[in-house]
Amino acid sequence: KTELAMEERKIAQEKAELALLNQRRKDDLLELEALRRQREELEFLEMKAKKEEEDAMRAKEEKERRRVRMEEDRIRRALEAEAQKSQESSERERKFRQAEVEQLKRQIGKQQIQEEG
Image (cartoon, rainbow, N blue to C red):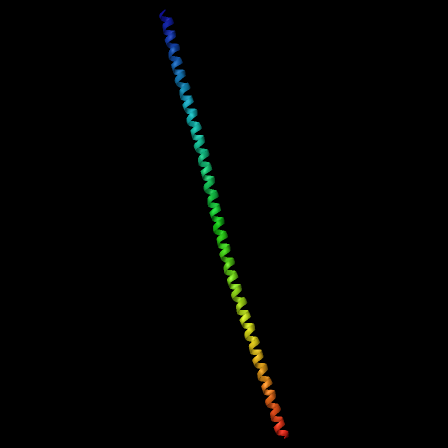
């Protein structure tokens, strides 16, 4: 009878230990799952941060390209305006020189008439 009681106590003790081990196993599995979710969340946040950084870099590069294009356009317009002014100035100068030539021709013509007369 005492042997049976001892065996029952031993079985009860083993059951208690087994229940404790099962509970620890469940707790470990829950903790493992929580860690897995945390790792996935961290990977997602890292990926999101990397994408945001890349987007910011692309936006910065595009802004710089636009700035350079605007500066190139400004310089091109200034050069075109300068070329136009130069062309207009050359045209005025050519007309002025042509008028001087015409005036000299008239003076020479008058002188020739006076010399002949």
